Image (cartoon, rainbow, N blue to C red):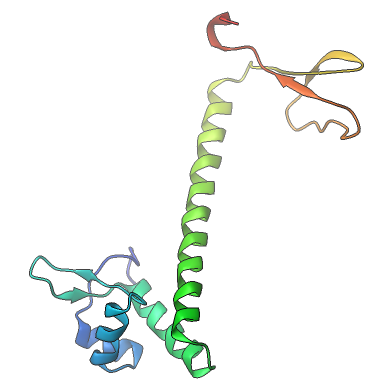
Length: 141
């Protein structure tokens, strides 16, 4: 199993065999931007495990009657979803680290009942107007 599925490791002949396509088909897909492999310093194509998965998906979708422009859009959307999931995980980690580094920080809510401390995880009723306020670091308000 390959640890980094984005690492460009397969030459075009191997990628063609793994994806069960002709090497010329892979070259055409590269030219039109459908599945774009990495390149060596000398300019040779190097396909990643993710590229092989994409090529297999292209073959399956094409056999089901989907057009190449539609397949290209689908692959772009899948890449965007993958990137956004990675970003969400990064942000969740940063938020977790921030919370752990500031255990005594309190959050307050102000509404018709006045200002009240809000404990972590507590939900405020949506029917009330709520303004959240948290003291700044160092007391410079």
